Length: 139
Image (cartoon, rainbow, N blue to C red):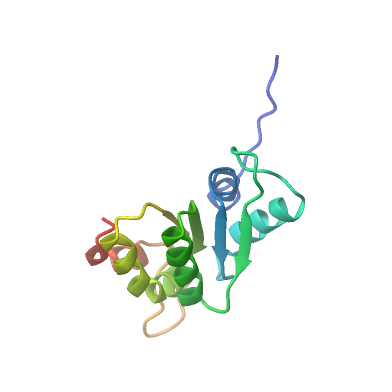
């Protein structure tokens, strides 16, 4: 039996795994990770189940902080939960990341690592956003 090979980027691959392994997906669109939320939302809207046979609930929040808060709340309720973010959005999630780490609740934040815009807008890839989260207990 031959398999069809497809070449895709990380922003396309991550939501396929996230949708298959989670019950709640909290999203807020932020470039360049917006595609991940859109793919997950389309999969749930089409009725595609996860590996446990349920359709993940995709919730679009009003801000990055809201998405992190929704992840925290869903984790406390016992749901397998994830989100997608990048750069400034990840920095806004740090307060909830401290809570999630302190409560030892497992989750994955899918991060499209990008430079933090300090003096001027930056679209270059680096890990300054992820490195800013080292003290939260996640790494």
